[in-house]
Image (cartoon, rainbow, N blue to C red; front, top):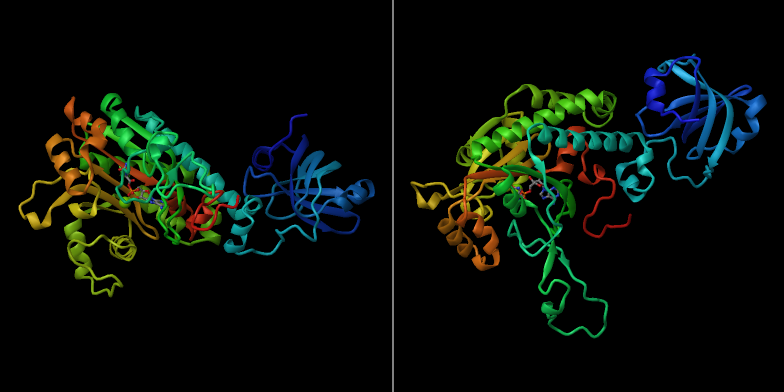
Amino acid sequence: MAHTRVGDLLKTGEIGTAVTLQGWVRTKREGKGVGFLEVNDGSCLASIQVVVVQESLGGALKQVNTGAAVQVLGTLVASQGKGQRVEVQAQTLTLVGAADAETYPLQKKRHSFEFLREIAHLRPRTNSFGAVFRVRNTCAMAVHQFFQERGFLWVHTPMITVSDCEGAGERFQVTAFDLTQPALPPKLDFTEDFFGRPAYLTVSGQLEAEIMAMALTNVYTFGPTFRAENSNTSRHLAEFWMVEPEMAFCDLEGDADLAEAFLKHIFRTVLEQCPEDMAFFQERISDRVLDNAHKIIDEPFARISYTEAIALLEHSGHAFEFPVHWGIDLQSEHERYLAEVHFQRPVVVMDYPANIKAFYMRLNDQVDPQRQTVRAMDVLVPGIGELIGGSQREERLEVLEQRMRSVGLNPEDYWWYLDLRRFGSVPHAGFGLGFERLVQFMTGMGNIRDVIPFPRYPQNAEF
Ligand code: 4AD
Ligand code: MG
């Protein structure tokens, strides 16, 4: 007999039908002659109540504890209890996998997220993490749906590269050398290594996505990226997923339009498909979750230049830890002031100073050379700060070569990237969305380590 998922039973299950239920016991209660199990299988937030008459099934019930896996054959009946439409009257109860009530770490009480991080192999069995991973799944599907409906091709960029897209030197090195050998030479000869040169885990698929866009016009990547930045913050991971669209024949305004339509689509989809999980986040995690979501969907994003943003911060009367003046890289406190306090909705900041941004961004024609800017944009959102970083790319060969040299890159190392400017170069633009920051923003979860199943951060890669 095919087994039935809890979500289907609770929503559409017809009273009187026979069901086979499989799942994990969240709680067990015993009354006079009857036992009650709350069984959850991850298909939805709610568990389903299973009523066990002890006369017939008391023996089996004794062995079943919180955390155990069970199979129940029974009948769906109208529930007497409040808050649920139906419950299962058990005919047989089978213990599939026992759990010792004494040592099972998840008890009925609320556990802190810090504690749950230490048992990341069990935390998917809690309400909060079930909800996070269902919403994360829906976000991922919405990403693909958005691009596929618009004719973007999903391209698969490599995870191992030799370039440093962001130029920040925050790369993990990849080697086939056995670095545990006691007698390593003082200087390793990487011509002897697997790739014949130093190689790294990618920090971004952008450079390769540009190659693909220069033939296929509109593409996107969606995959893991890696950064060895030693940031112990609630918004940084060493391994995170990034979504990177890249569009040929597109400028920065078109790029910002895409980012806005994209975020609106994802929020709309999640509100439609995960109403219970979103209501849970609103009630238990942050009372701004639904308001945020509706603002994203209903209101146009604000758009300002970096120069305007600096003026705004300078005149805000707010005391920032990091002093504000033209030329600084915006800190999280500045970004959040703009999005949270001033605009109270997402804001796209454009045209940043050239010397705080990566080499590939298109130089603006400048009146004041002291204030050289590039066609960069960041999408800042309440509670998070930077959610998206993007730019129009430098498509002019000489300007790009010049810029590479000025930041200490050797143009010869990037010959293929420059070839794109030699042969059929066009204006093009794209952005990168931090997928975990999106899920964080969507759910109101305070720490990015709690929106990815197995977070990677300094000193942690247990699971
Ligand atoms: O702003 P970033 O560094 O931009 C790029 O990598 C570009 N190559 C993207 C592009 O234009 N195709 O990163 C993009 C986004 C950030 O806005 C942030 O949301 C996220 O990636 N991000 C991180 N998320 C989690 N942990 C980290 N350590 C992150 N670093 C960046
Ligand atoms: Mg950035």
